[in-house]
Length: 497
Image (cartoon, rainbow, N blue to C red; front, side):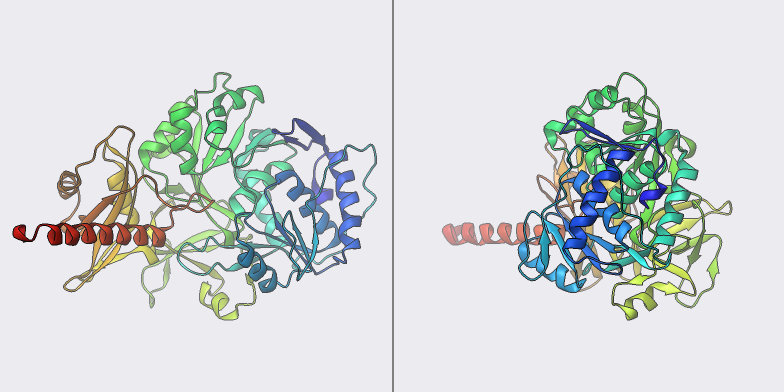
């Protein structure tokens, strides 16, 4: 993969204030290859990377690929027991982290040193269909899976990304996302690198960093960035708009993008193209994406596939159709080889060469896709299926609601009812009974939330996805606390019982 980087490729570490051209990057990888080989990393082995240094991660990534090893990037937020479990699960040969593991040969993250040397390590002649990257799925509803991507699949996906985005747009890319998952690594970093652009590494900016987003875009004349909705909920409040109009395109993905937020991002960016993106790790990043201006910012619209095909399966026994509503199935050159050591899970996910996404979508006669929600998030009220994401969007459209998450609560009569948690906008005081009444005027009766609670913020993954199971647990703890308070009040004032 190192040989595929164009001569114009550059990496800039924004916080360190250093810029590395392709030659210096290749030289750094040459030094690191020797260190990795000295740790007995060889062709077909697996290198685990678990830290926050994005420049070091990219050096290790390309160095491991030069050797012919597969890379397993992992979240730096993993606890020590989770790190050990991941190392055992993927049978890692070498572990790169600022926290060594006693059970695996461990190295510190790669350290970039300015060098006038050149790359002396030739790439291993590895089969294109051998694993090169193993990504962990988000695990918001179940135990994370290991998605095995081959070199062929990864290269195909990146080539399609460049074709659909345009190499000129990718010339000056800002990276705000962590690089241990497909959106950040493939969509935000590898795609611009292989397009010959300059990559500005500014991963995981905190609140004070996001306050300078507009100025940073102007300073480096950024043309492209990929992002998540949760980043924009903060940035739009704290950052001034960019003034130089260098920005040409923004991607927003990894979780549903509300229509009002979509419009607000486009307005903040000076009416530039803002794409609502749909992708999954199993497809090596993007499946498709749509510019808001071209679809009037209709919730869930993601357009036509970027290579490959999309079909709809309306029920378990039904045939795949080219239009209609049901589960989204995809066929793409970037499709995973398998789930790591999970034959049963792989067989269940692949349906005659089509990958079952587990997402509900609507495909129109022109091949344009709208994503509705997750099958696992459906709420079954008396046999009527309700999309949790639909209720999320409804609640977020209320003028006093900043964020929302709906989920199912057990009910002895209906089986399940809709419950939700909301986050109020700054200075807003939400009357929950009034909010329920407001919902009843805008959605069918079975979809109206039965109970709503307020919280300061929703628990999310590093990828920006709401942890719906954790939200439900938070809601239940609030309900228990309220019940305990009521019981204490009754015990203190028995005459009122």
